[in-house]
Length: 144
Image 1 (cartoon, rainbow, N blue to C red):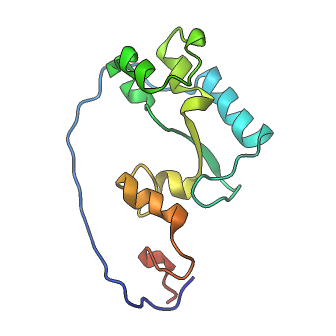
Image 2: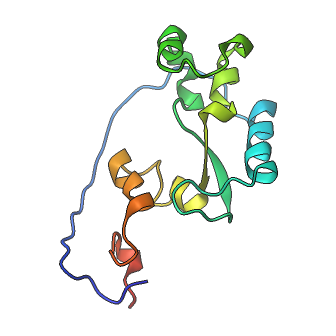
Protein backbone atom coordinates (compact mmCIF):
# COMPACT_ATOMS: atom_id res chain seq x y z
CA UNK A 1 0.00 0.00 0.00
CA UNK A 2 1.13 3.49 -0.79
CA UNK A 3 1.11 6.46 1.58
CA UNK A 4 0.01 9.24 -0.75
CA UNK A 5 -1.02 10.04 -4.30
CA UNK A 6 1.78 11.81 -6.22
CA UNK A 7 1.58 13.22 -9.74
CA UNK A 8 -1.73 11.48 -10.42
CA UNK A 9 -5.22 12.76 -11.01
CA UNK A 10 -8.47 11.08 -10.11
CA UNK A 11 -11.16 10.36 -12.68
CA UNK A 12 -14.58 9.36 -11.40
CA UNK A 13 -17.08 7.83 -13.77
CA UNK A 14 -20.60 6.52 -13.43
CA UNK A 15 -21.63 4.45 -16.40
CA UNK A 16 -24.99 2.99 -17.18
CA UNK A 17 -26.14 0.75 -19.99
CA UNK A 18 -29.39 -0.77 -21.07
CA UNK A 19 -29.53 -4.15 -22.80
CA UNK A 20 -31.78 -7.13 -23.14
CA UNK A 21 -30.93 -10.67 -22.12
CA UNK A 22 -32.54 -13.50 -24.06
CA UNK A 23 -34.95 -15.77 -22.25
CA UNK A 24 -33.11 -18.55 -20.46
CA UNK A 25 -33.60 -21.00 -17.66
CA UNK A 26 -32.27 -19.96 -14.26
CA UNK A 27 -28.53 -20.53 -14.20
CA UNK A 28 -27.16 -23.42 -12.22
CA UNK A 29 -23.62 -24.70 -12.37
CA UNK A 30 -23.39 -27.36 -15.04
CA UNK A 31 -21.26 -30.45 -14.48
CA UNK A 32 -18.92 -29.15 -17.21
CA UNK A 33 -18.55 -25.81 -15.39
CA UNK A 34 -17.72 -27.63 -12.12
CA UNK A 35 -15.26 -29.90 -13.96
CA UNK A 36 -13.62 -26.90 -15.69
CA UNK A 37 -13.25 -24.91 -12.47
CA UNK A 38 -11.96 -27.94 -10.55
CA UNK A 39 -9.36 -28.72 -13.23
CA UNK A 40 -8.14 -25.13 -13.55
CA UNK A 41 -8.12 -24.32 -9.83
CA UNK A 42 -7.38 -27.61 -8.05
CA UNK A 43 -5.45 -29.66 -10.62
CA UNK A 44 -3.54 -27.03 -12.62
CA UNK A 45 -3.48 -24.60 -9.64
CA UNK A 46 -4.07 -21.64 -11.98
CA UNK A 47 -3.62 -18.31 -10.17
CA UNK A 48 -5.73 -15.19 -10.66
CA UNK A 49 -5.02 -13.82 -14.14
CA UNK A 50 -4.66 -10.27 -12.79
CA UNK A 51 -2.78 -10.48 -9.49
CA UNK A 52 -1.48 -14.04 -9.32
CA UNK A 53 -3.05 -14.90 -5.97
CA UNK A 54 -4.32 -18.40 -5.34
CA UNK A 55 -6.85 -17.23 -2.74
CA UNK A 56 -10.62 -17.07 -3.36
CA UNK A 57 -10.39 -18.13 -7.01
CA UNK A 58 -13.44 -18.12 -9.25
CA UNK A 59 -14.08 -18.97 -12.88
CA UNK A 60 -15.11 -16.11 -15.17
CA UNK A 61 -16.70 -16.68 -18.58
CA UNK A 62 -14.11 -14.99 -20.80
CA UNK A 63 -15.81 -14.64 -24.20
CA UNK A 64 -19.48 -15.52 -23.73
CA UNK A 65 -21.46 -15.29 -20.49
CA UNK A 66 -24.08 -17.95 -19.86
CA UNK A 67 -26.92 -15.38 -19.82
CA UNK A 68 -26.22 -14.54 -23.48
CA UNK A 69 -25.89 -18.12 -24.75
CA UNK A 70 -29.36 -18.04 -26.34
CA UNK A 71 -28.49 -14.88 -28.27
CA UNK A 72 -25.31 -16.23 -29.87
CA UNK A 73 -24.79 -16.90 -33.56
CA UNK A 74 -22.47 -19.88 -33.18
CA UNK A 75 -21.22 -19.60 -36.77
CA UNK A 76 -19.77 -16.19 -35.84
CA UNK A 77 -18.15 -17.68 -32.74
CA UNK A 78 -16.67 -20.55 -34.77
CA UNK A 79 -15.17 -18.04 -37.17
CA UNK A 80 -13.63 -15.99 -34.36
CA UNK A 81 -12.43 -18.96 -32.27
CA UNK A 82 -10.96 -21.61 -34.58
CA UNK A 83 -8.76 -23.00 -31.77
CA UNK A 84 -11.76 -24.30 -29.82
CA UNK A 85 -12.40 -28.01 -30.43
CA UNK A 86 -15.68 -27.66 -32.33
CA UNK A 87 -15.93 -31.43 -32.79
CA UNK A 88 -17.11 -31.59 -29.14
CA UNK A 89 -19.78 -28.89 -29.60
CA UNK A 90 -23.35 -30.13 -29.19
CA UNK A 91 -24.90 -27.28 -27.20
CA UNK A 92 -24.04 -23.78 -25.96
CA UNK A 93 -22.83 -25.23 -22.66
CA UNK A 94 -20.01 -27.05 -24.46
CA UNK A 95 -18.39 -23.72 -25.32
CA UNK A 96 -19.66 -21.47 -22.52
CA UNK A 97 -18.56 -23.75 -19.67
CA UNK A 98 -15.37 -25.03 -21.31
CA UNK A 99 -11.80 -24.34 -20.21
CA UNK A 100 -11.40 -22.42 -23.45
CA UNK A 101 -13.97 -19.86 -22.27
CA UNK A 102 -12.76 -19.79 -18.64
CA UNK A 103 -10.55 -17.24 -16.96
CA UNK A 104 -9.50 -17.79 -13.36
CA UNK A 105 -9.81 -14.67 -11.22
CA UNK A 106 -9.78 -14.00 -7.50
CA UNK A 107 -13.07 -12.73 -6.10
CA UNK A 108 -11.68 -9.18 -5.99
CA UNK A 109 -10.76 -9.09 -9.69
CA UNK A 110 -13.96 -10.92 -10.63
CA UNK A 111 -16.71 -9.10 -8.72
CA UNK A 112 -15.44 -6.27 -6.48
CA UNK A 113 -16.22 -2.59 -7.19
CA UNK A 114 -13.18 -0.70 -8.58
CA UNK A 115 -11.46 -4.01 -9.36
CA UNK A 116 -13.83 -6.64 -10.78
CA UNK A 117 -14.24 -7.36 -14.47
CA UNK A 118 -18.02 -7.25 -13.98
CA UNK A 119 -17.85 -3.61 -12.84
CA UNK A 120 -15.28 -1.90 -15.06
CA UNK A 121 -14.54 -1.16 -18.69
CA UNK A 122 -12.07 -3.75 -19.99
CA UNK A 123 -9.02 -1.43 -20.41
CA UNK A 124 -9.47 -0.09 -16.87
CA UNK A 125 -9.78 -3.62 -15.50
CA UNK A 126 -6.83 -5.04 -17.45
CA UNK A 127 -4.35 -2.32 -16.42
CA UNK A 128 -4.44 -3.80 -12.91
CA UNK A 129 -2.30 -6.65 -14.28
CA UNK A 130 0.38 -4.30 -15.58
CA UNK A 131 0.39 -1.25 -13.31
CA UNK A 132 3.63 -0.35 -11.51
CA UNK A 133 3.88 -1.29 -7.84
CA UNK A 134 4.47 2.35 -6.87
CA UNK A 135 1.40 3.67 -8.72
CA UNK A 136 -1.85 4.22 -6.84
CA UNK A 137 -4.61 3.05 -9.12
CA UNK A 138 -7.60 3.06 -6.77
CA UNK A 139 -8.46 4.90 -3.53
CA UNK A 140 -8.35 1.68 -1.49
CA UNK A 141 -4.56 1.61 -1.97
CA UNK A 142 -4.07 4.81 0.04
CA UNK A 143 -3.05 4.27 3.66
CA UNK A 144 -5.12 6.36 6.01
